[in-house]
Image (cartoon, rainbow, N blue to C red):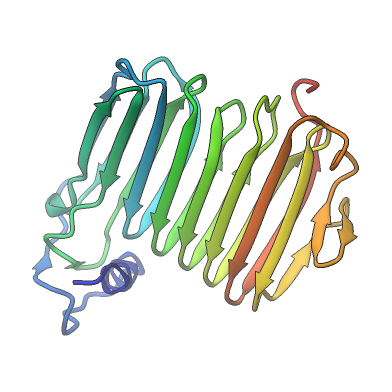
Length: 246
């Protein structure tokens, strides 16, 4: 089954609808709420590529872990217990965390929440694929190098403030919903927006062609380069003082 179909089925389930759509695979039933605790040691890796794949639900990410990853996943569809793997090749770690797709549909009342904490010090290339649902992604203090986010319907809040010591290239692809980005003042920021987005709210940014830039762009030694593309929705760009000076 293609990922897009999995996301469609999971999105309908989270909307609280009982269903048995053709092509959505076998149906599971909601059970007792379970918690899967995560604790992944960094090991000998000097940098990590992480891939998160979640059909639908609520996703929260922040830093602060003393290991590579700590966190908890709550779910009440037993077949949706997440699958995880972590391998190290040379200096590079590879982390995969994804929703099991053995069962693609369920009765109403589904709960699926991921609350993850990454290590702040290790350089990280992060990919997130998510269907319907809300997300709160706090990247402040993390050593992100690249970020690739694909999201369906829902509302996403992303915090990019902090004392960035390295450049960041981020790509955000969103469907129907809203994206709220909190961005630093002292670090150079360029945001390009493409696609059929409904509205871009960026009162503290200047227009540079089709892009939005802050006053520190081109002046600070570090740049956050963010590309946003998607369908109908809204993008809100807010500036906030960084916690430190670059």
